[in-house]
Length: 206
Image (tube, rainbow, N blue to C red):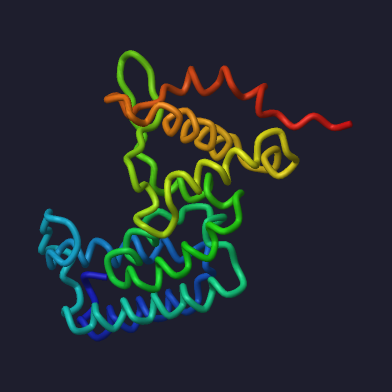
């Protein structure tokens, strides 16, 4: 991209946005995020080498990406995308209002709550193990902690729960363990502890 003029770089990125599927969009979003960082619009680390387009052109790309996400969200569950995290970060920083509208709608479906946690939960790792940590208001006002907990518990031992991937299953259990002791100072949940509950949450066919 550095061999292109700013206009050529902008046009090339637009072509990529338009040609990529929703699942592939994170590839170009990774680049757009680097440009955001270079101007200090997102984050604090500024790398001037990524200023391959102007800020005005960057604003134009933001709108194109957000419009594509909003359109895609009408027919797709974006939480199911392979690598949604960078897209989520960009969307959250550029147009949090439209993101919140989408998240609030999707979180009415209990099985989407663990999928959302896969994107937003903090993962920790140390010499003593690894797991996840949560904070109060993990859903930033679009869903209360209590409602999230009750929705996740409703998945216990159901076929819907069995259809979640392993990471989403573990995050569902981890969130419930955290919620049940959320008044304690320690907000971390160890993965080894979560694993002990997997059989209890397992769906048994009759």
